[in-house]
Length: 345
Image (cartoon, rainbow, N blue to C red; front, side):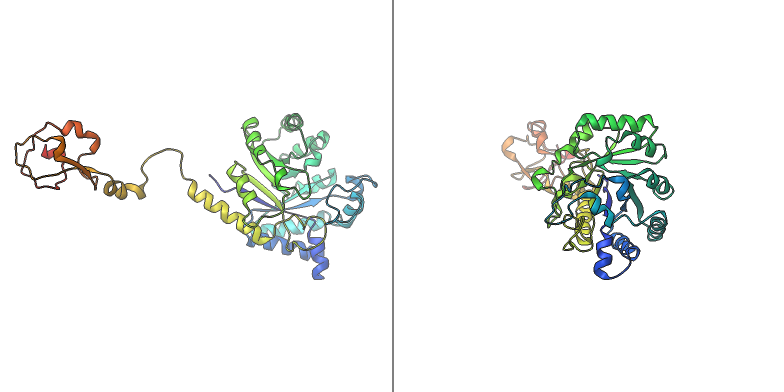
């Protein structure tokens, strides 16, 4: 198994951190990128949108309002839509300097246009799965597309895939996702990773997580064991902050813990072919058994079953060949407890 590609979904969480630390949003966003790199994460991802083009003004909230009390989507998005191409360009440049991949999800055509020169991969939200004109537009940019498939039927996923392929998209990754904030553990539905791998064997399959971080990061670890090649989770520097996506996000230590799990699983997975490993060669020889004499024998005596016992080490004739040995004569004098070899019988 190869370690999954890890995406820290920063989204717009940096705005709340900027306010909390009394720094600029750009400084806060760079702090997020730095901490993600330190945690061993492969890519940081933001969200590029404008409130007026993503949602109608009276669209109701669909998140846990005890954690994020804003009542309408438009009101919430207005708080976090201040960055444009210039700011994302600076974040892209900073990410490249640190050696971490830069991503941002476009939610409008203008964002898709300026991000095309910054990102190596386009991530598309579950919310745009059926926005076929937008899928075609992004696919035409010629970049790989990672598409979340939350809150959908399989037929809708298949339709989206056909749209992307018809626009000549060369690389598609489908991310299992449950569009619930936060997602209850019993709703995580990780078996869907296996289903997507069966239905779409030609594509990468991953997991975009909205569950609350567990103390051992078992949920993300299980997603990896079920075959997720890409894992995305919301990222925060302070899970206690009230606001958009902090309450179900992982912090740097959560991500580092998950990555340690992935590294361990990668290390222990090994190969599917059953064969003797190099580390087993000496134990195999010393721990297996050989046919050993139970008494002193003289040259020319016929070996009977009672003359033999199976003992370690396995440097002589194997017990599996006992029927071949019984009835043969011994070719030399041999003391009790001698390990028999083929040259002796």
